[in-house]
Length: 415
Image 1 (cartoon, rainbow, N blue to C red):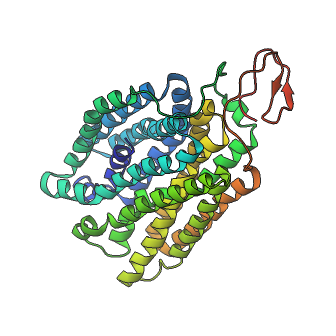
Image 2 (cartoon, rainbow, N blue to C red; image 1 turned 30 degrees about the vertical axis):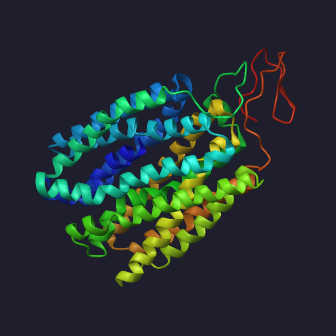
Image 3 (cartoon, helix red, strand yellow; image 1 turned 180 degrees about the vertical axis):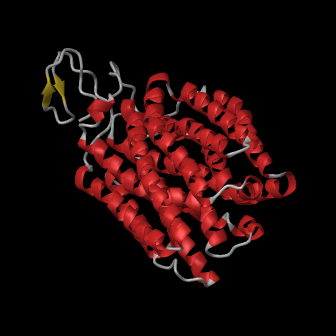
């Protein structure tokens, strides 16, 4: 599912150079199109989490994949900037359900010991979409035109739906004990008063922009600033995404082994994310070199760090929050990440247009350390996220037994 999710959203960054020739688009129109996607993505990320926590992963994922696949295919009919802007906005509305749906599924079907590796595997699926995008989309564009790239990728999502429906109907094999009297999910108002939820949201506000750069701007960077040809982009442009995939699996595996060895799950994720932040900063420091070896060393370190980051931070909601609010927490944080992405994307558009590429990578070097800091400050390691039975009286308590309120039959959803 996430392979399709990232493949669909990355088509524009690969084929825009051809759309530019055909339809006369400008660099600032590309920036506006990306921002339209991110603005809708930010609003709907939390919306998709609320929907999935209420209708379940099986129905929710099917709905979102159906909608974004149709929108992606419709990009093949674009005739001008207005049409592109509208369709990018609609793609941003529909695509967040892929991530919140995946997080919801993993939190329900895997334990904390299994969750890091499970999350890293589906995260690598997202990377696989980005991995196959350069060669596949360059091939389609060269042989059948840029419109075919959108139509083919959209059709793939529709073909995938029956397989999801069959697989998601299988019984869960998780060893997590079922909980009786499970209360409803959290409201946004409650989450906005929760320090852990806000810390995770801050992590994504700062940290997501690095991934957005790899997704939306790396092809443009290689073509414009490193003088790659369109054909060369198709030949080697997949390498950073392969590195990111391998690093995601590696990072998730290591943190899961740490949990199996007795380390707290949240501590294990935070430690791996801190190492990832150092790798991204080191890679960004090499950007101003033009020698091919150093260009790829920069991409190697940056991509490896981003993979380790994504292989772990997606596990935080399942490790630090009750299962019934996992998708909503992830959605709220994803919305904050998209807001940060809009701001960073606007800066990137400006710096790319003025040739200040070093400023882009200097900013990237700072973002991930800023992102992991709130986790160390406000997300404690000793939290157990399993949902307790509802209190037998009208008294609500937190995880430590402290009375929170006396509202009748309304246990607090997060502590």
